[in-house]
Amino acid sequence: MGKTLEYYFDYVSPFTYLANTQLPGIVERTGAEVDYRPILLGALQKSAENPAPITVPNKAKYMTTDLSRWAKRYGITLQFNPAFPINTVTLMRAALVTLEEGGFPEFHAAMFDAMWRDPKNLGDQAVVRDVISGVGLDADRILERAQEPAVKEKLKTNTAEAHERGAFGAPTFFVGGEMYFGNDRLDFVEEALK
Image (cartoon, rainbow, N blue to C red; front, side, top):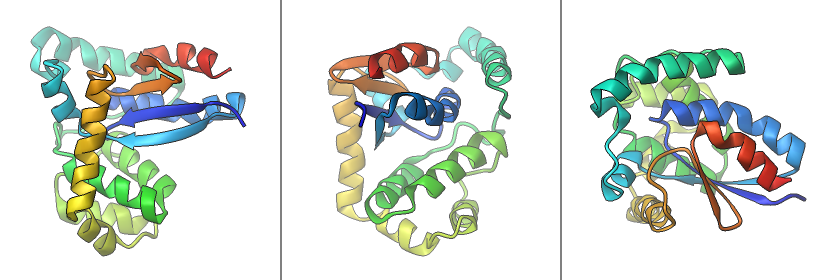
């Protein structure tokens, strides 16, 4: 068994979507185990005093070009979601529920695909239910549990922990005590895992 890769993520981040598409290959090549840590990106950015790229005009303009370049390099489909930015608090809590109860791999893939491959308005609860049900999971149960105080607290704890460890955005990875931020740091992540 390889090292553990701690992965702080939020479905709202297109760069996290890009990185996520590369994780299976990294895991296969390194034997790493991924420790998935859902966070609320907006809250992390606020804590870190790091404005979202979309709020900085030049960054926002460049981001579209950069995303297209990365998608082409990876050979994947990425379509900017017209409903962006989407409040993902329910999605991230639901991710925690599926991590606990099972069904996380299906849920995780479905959320990223619905956000960035086949853009859907995941701010609409009816759409979220359809996406969850579409991968054979009990949407009512998951979304009901996502409102439980312990689940809400776990998301807050994960987000605060990420900030305390030095994170300021997503995706953020840790291998041992070493932090790596961004889709463009995956080569360093893989080296650290080897």
